[in-house]
Length: 487
RNA sequence: GCGUCACUAGCUCAACUGGUAGAGCAAUUGACUCUUAAUCAAUAGGUUCGGGGUUCGAGUCCCCGGUGACGCACCA
Image (tube, rainbow, N blue to C red):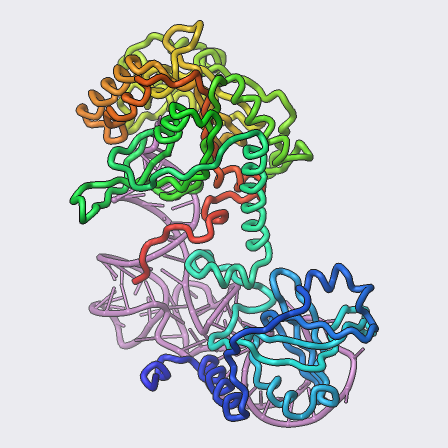
């Protein structure tokens, strides 16, 4: 304790000093509980019921600022986002309480009892009959006017960001509302919410490198899931005909504006549906999320009016570039990419080159919500072959503001075809593609018992929240984004 | 992983081509019984991210390291 004091700066010393003085006055600065009669928001909403009435109300919250005037002081108390002014008058609360209140610091958690009135300047205010400290702060808050701007501190100490920046708190409230809306939508349509393993002995369902961990008792390697697709499909086999899960997935990859190593997806599967049905459902979900149809994201207006544009993978490339990239081999694709001035850098595989051409020439310009449909078979090992077009699968990706926000297929339910696709993946893995799939015999086994025709969708929650809150980095919609260790 | 830029008081920011590190808020003391970015007067607060170097002299220039932001790569 004594040693710690050496590190304290002047402000912190002062706050510890105030704590001691309060204890000397017989006031315990860390109370066990307090029962506010109202939230500040309730008082603001129902002020007519209370102003100038003989009704004693109480609130609790954090002291955000203080204006002392001799024998009177004004304190702003904030409980969630809403703030209310408290009028503390020596004549009303008494000498002892007033002296104690003077020892409170900005940042302290206080409980206030009193009656509501309007000041001469028209501000809703509690005339305190009693004010008590509930929890003493020992470090000063960020400055009141400019707030907290240092992005590193905002991410490392999110609590300070939430205290100082209301916009930040609103983003996270909105995030929860979005998740609740989607959950309600799916539940109302008869989808069963389930939980599937995060620790998986074989990972799959997406192209990504996993985080690896170890179970001591069984002495086995486990992977943090990169997707939950293969488990949800097992449940479809089991006769849970509509199923969904909000899942934290983990991918051992780089971090940028749209990628955090752990992120949230909702995946949902519906038996007897195909990808056309699933496109309609995705549109319906956004009907609910964007009731006004239009939003502004990064200064661009985005119109969610249905139906969204369908953009055929190969046709759109041909329209944009004049090149038909179907049925080309890897070398031919490389040549086309070169002629289109696309820098392929490290990209070598067939799928990666195709995807790069698509991203550069088509996807970037898809601002209004669009479904990219009918992807190449080679890059879609879990999607079933298109019913009419050769070489492509029944798959779509919703693209909004140029950003991929999901992925969906008519699910491959032919176990023999699935085994072949896995074999191809295993070959690519052997050729050094670290993101290729592992063989999953247990999953194929489940398909052998018969999976109904099924449509499945995965939606990236973080990116959807970014869009709907106009945030331009995933870190601003994830409460505790991954950062390096300090020091 | 690579490149560019940033890091100064608790917070938000200054400090010209190298020349005594400053302001506002927050804090302390005093005045003030309807203030609200309260006001007035005074006081205190710094390992300029860390380490090394160049120099008479480094917040400023050079090197190494740390953390972050942005871009690139990875994430088909």
